[in-house]
Length: 195
Ligand SMILES: [Zn+2]
Image 1 (tube, protein in one colour):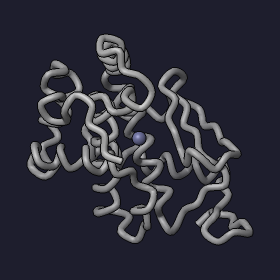
Image 2 (cartoon, helix red, strand yellow; image 1 turned 90 degrees about the vertical axis):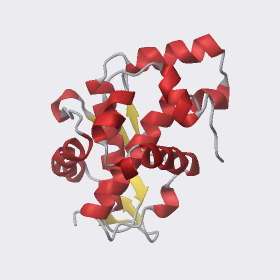
Image 3 (cartoon, protein in one colour; image 1 turned 30 degrees about the vertical axis):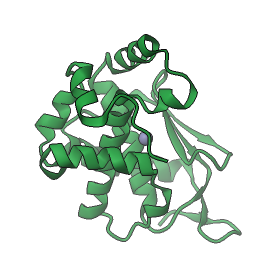
Image 4 (cartoon, helix red, strand yellow; image 1 turned 90 degrees about the horizontal axis):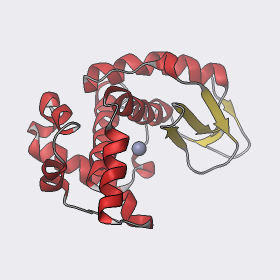
């Protein structure tokens, strides 16, 4: 592996070359697993020197951001990347997703924490976690990622598994992205949060 080990155990320093190479490896797997389109030429890479968040995707400029000093075991960076690339695929494939989410938030007057627990975010994070965990099962079994998973994300993933044949009905899941918000509320509730 191309990790550079830092002084603290399990803390690795990511290099730009390593991240680029890993994106090229993981993007086709995300496409295959989700049936969505992942255009890796569409965004630039940016590293952050802070420890939190571990990784994020910026919808506005299609940038992926990572903590340069990342705490990660084995292949878990593949999973972190798979999750963030899935966010890129979601917004890249469904161009009005962000607009619809914003409209819902403003129509409900949601604030602070509740913004985070709206039904669009439940779909977005639940599905990214579903794809990430499927990648682990198929390709990166030794990745130790459990401790970095958010309980709400796991709960939303569970909802998708329950309704869509253990998460295998990709057509059904992908149709949710353009379905009326009422369909999402039926599955996730209006502001489900699980802390
Ligand atoms: Zn996410």
